[in-house]
Length: 395
Ligand code: PMP
Image (cartoon, rainbow, N blue to C red; front, top):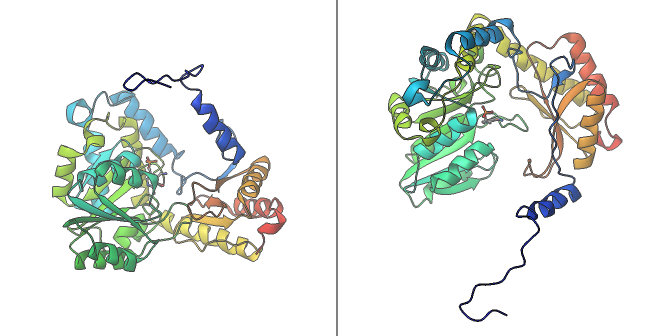
């Protein structure tokens, strides 16, 4: 025993990171070890796991714009946006994104993750209350944690629960935060109802439209545009450039004074190296493709619906998609992993979600439709998923 006031003696571990082994063991016992798999460029798998909803990531116009911008501007942005990192490409992308989505202004970040961190923290703080849907994306959750605001995470897609939390908040300033299309099940938030609730309680609304841009709304203008809320003075939208636009990066769209405030205060904007010019150029090129080919958005929605209908007919419990994401229920986490692995062996890559990534405890395969899926690829996907399913996966 140590004398009072003396330094506590501790048995030193062999190595300061020995404690990591215990965590790794726990995860392994629970079947939750994650491993990185590097795909090769020529893999040739049918991809139903990525978020390249419009098939633009490898489009020559989009990838070519990245290559040309890298040669013209350099491989990296060379500095933060407020120092040397803002190029004409960033300005052009911000102008066109805002115009396309129907917002007053836009600000490009290095990712959707940093856009969410920046927007949530800069628009709240200790003196604010945040009310979120309990299934919002991890980047929004981190923003809420960093903000030091009072945070209430309420029932999924429930304007009533949001209203109750707003009515009982202790801080006057308030921000309601939701995804438009939720990433795991692909279901859509009731944006108009949420906006009405916000207005009744003098709260702003922030919508993460990562999975709506390029997929929902007129020509892919997004779920917020579809709800008629894009240009509203009390609505802020965040997007990623890495899904439908096939590039990399993120953005916040909203009233001009909100964007000005972010330029001055969002730490994930100010202290982060700017988005690489190649990524800005490819996002811009993708946005132009989308404007030239507005049918792309409808095509991905049609493919998602076909996938859902055919898997339902094959006996699986599937979601009816609001956007590009179709989720298929698996009997359990191990079954889900094995099912996804069997699909991969047969050349079809599907996503696999299980607890704790899914807070409702339901393991599922996550399939993403693409606008460029051919009829024979659709047939192959349905055949492989059906033939590799565990018996209990049928309803
Ligand atoms: N929001 C949602 C809903 C997402 O699904 C993602 C990407 N997984 C992000 C934000 C983060 O975007 P990014 O990948 O560009 O950082």
